[in-house]
Length: 245
Ligand SMILES: CC(=O)N[C@H](C=O)[C@@H](O)[C@H](O)[C@H](O)COP(=O)(O)O
Image (cartoon, rainbow, N blue to C red):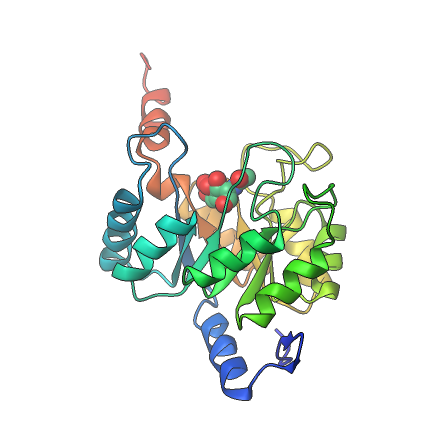
């Protein structure tokens, strides 16, 4: 990680704020961030349930932060969890849907997320505006930006635009990226060698061994979702291992 402070559109971020944000990232080094999200239609899909999930996970385990979807969920989690929140807003299900515009990013930041996760893939954005506008909006509100990418080139481009962290979140979810059952540790390693901002491993981390391997591959931290917070997915894996699933 470099010591560079993110700039606001009106000049450099105040030194104390920049120090606080650097400290926040420092606190995630080598550690686990838990993504607390439930898909539409899931019985756990509500701000109250996600707040309880986040509170339960973080009270019982040495977790360095949580990743939370949706303005209402972020506000609910913020009220009960005293850890850094990586916030996002999924709007839609196709193409660029993770915090797709600067307006979405502003709402996520204002809901209380210290880090705003946004789709930074090389696909058309729904409002046709450049990613740079979102980066500026997030920095203007004194927050950090996590670039969710699917390839090395996307991570390099996002870091060059001012993303404060890069995450492998979307590897396997764009038509042109590697598809595999487990995490894309190759992408983690390649990105870690190419960008000088922290790289997070995220997506299909199913086991503690994979999480450790991601750190070994160069990840600053790991973000784990379904393997911890999606009961049906966990139950399915157990059932699938039995003779009569
Ligand atoms: C592709 C996409 O929309 N990923 C989302 C990003 O926030 C979430 O649905 C994932 O749960 C999260 O990235 C963690 O991944 P996993 O649940 O595999 O540990």
